[in-house]
Length: 172
Image 1 (cartoon, one colour):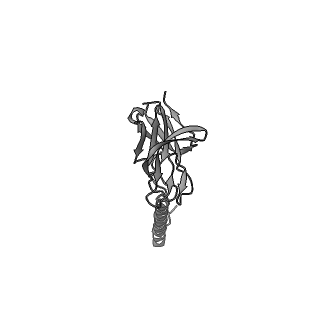
Image 2: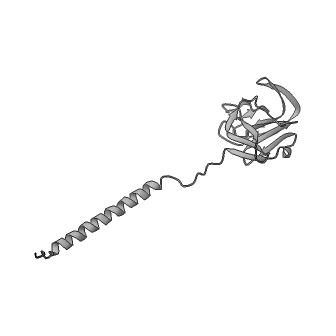
Image 3: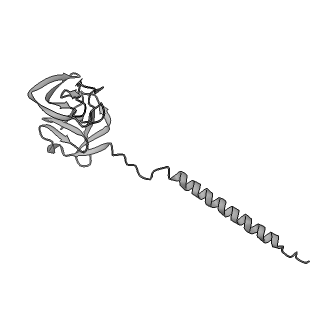
């Protein structure tokens, strides 16, 4: 049996097919890489649960936490947290001390009000419990859930968990 000699066309045809195949594989790989680039590797969202420090670090009255844009109030062993983000356009509201302490019933619970909140951007005004009373702000300031971390005893706020204005954390 004699073997048929290879023709020059067969070799050329093989290399053309090999080149086309390699080009298609390269295009497919580039397409997959382009699609993968649409999915981020890192989340730049800030965490919603944040440790604020130990309860004894919070003085009687109010403490502003600029990184979380949050006011934490303490009255004895009772704490609550109010957002410092204006509900109009997200400016940071500033606290202004009241000349006289007010006691107000908020959702059935008494609350001592020592401050009111003012938005420097567009003039919204809020009472000490965060209720909007003037300006373009459409709703009250948010109150956030506070808890104590079981691992180290620090005060923890959950910025993704707004609570009713009657919420209070009582320390043991």
